[in-house]
Length: 570
Figure 1 (tube, rainbow, N blue to C red):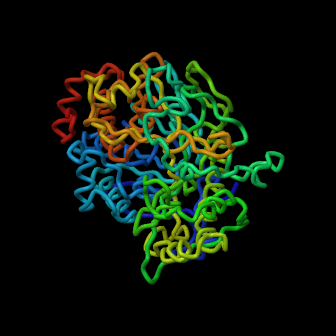
Figure 2 (spheres, rainbow, N blue to C red):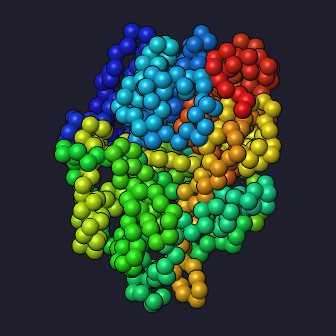
Figure 3 (cartoon, one colour):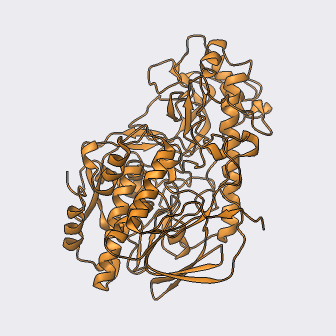
């Protein structure tokens, strides 16, 4: 095992805050300070800790769950997998996808008010505010505590075991991870991937939906050959194109939408030039090179665009810079095994039975994710280096790329590269109420609202495949959509608790019970904060009432949430 350097990161009078930070010093060379997802931690002496409420996952939803429960006089622990709190909100995603501003209340609104803005803030400042909120509430924050297992007995989680050797006992648990690791360890049902269209009668479900994003980021609809030698199938496919063919329209599969890092860029004089990653292979970007040189009429915007014959190929702006193109910072197809360590290729017409349990021990899953994490770093860092340096990139575009660089004021311990991978979708719990496209469109109304969501149903590409268009073999992206919801809609309390027959003391505000289509709208950081606060309140009420989370009186929860500033109805 590799021993990590341990020290008290922050000393607060009201908070027991224990954990580790990266061993590198600020402003070290990028190659020597790459972020990592998982480093095995030295096991300590066995120790038992007891709390009223334990929140596993220090995402924004986990933080608000912990703060709310603590404000309701509960002894609360927030357990973070790694050395930071705040998830993507402190890991680069600062161009907040808010939807309807007025739908955000409660602790989410309090957090943004503390920052003084709801978007384009500093990741460092966001983490500082989260830590102060936790401190003020008296939450015990435990860093670098990867989950090892959960003990489920009589349909209740009795305790969880951490890789450090600690055992955590609690009356109520909250799974606030982006992946759903705790409830999987507790044998709660879940799905991974995309439902077939027939399962919930959703127009956005399955492969090759045609309702939105038609022609968007599809290589300008040009007949670009996918083969290493153009037009020669025997030469093999270019890198970053799937070998397996896509399914038919409407079929489901086990693919999840692409992940990336939300880079923080600047065009100031002190910008950090885009570094060359170890093992850099320019041929990895041969498809992009061919696209860049395919037609002189293409206009490169370095931003979002839907105008014909325009493309990104990436977004470059001051601050949070996301994907924005046919071949972009989204690593399409590189993440299929991230949610639970497994992936079965192929397509299906009928929805498979939910999964339960862990396909592999947690330590093996973390090691696999670390490889996927590093592959994503290599891909995206290499992409930016390619655009900034490769002679195949048109000179005017290359000059514009080089006018930007990494922001020296952010992520100083990880070479100015974000420490969080944007896990847009992991497991999704399957409970007695599944949020679906009809909810998002206002055709089905949840009567037990615990918060509002309002952003568009939004999925990034799930696969890049070979297709035949107008008699020519070419390449296209599949799985993207973006359809606005007509108005803010309520998220059901029943969707953030498991079925009572499976677990009675667990709440899930992040990877809640939802279809892929609906999750595309719900999966926004402000919504996670909203649902997290509601989960923390529900956990506290369940303790006070000595009932299962499924049996708390909704009117009592609703009254508490409204008193805490939550917005429950449009």
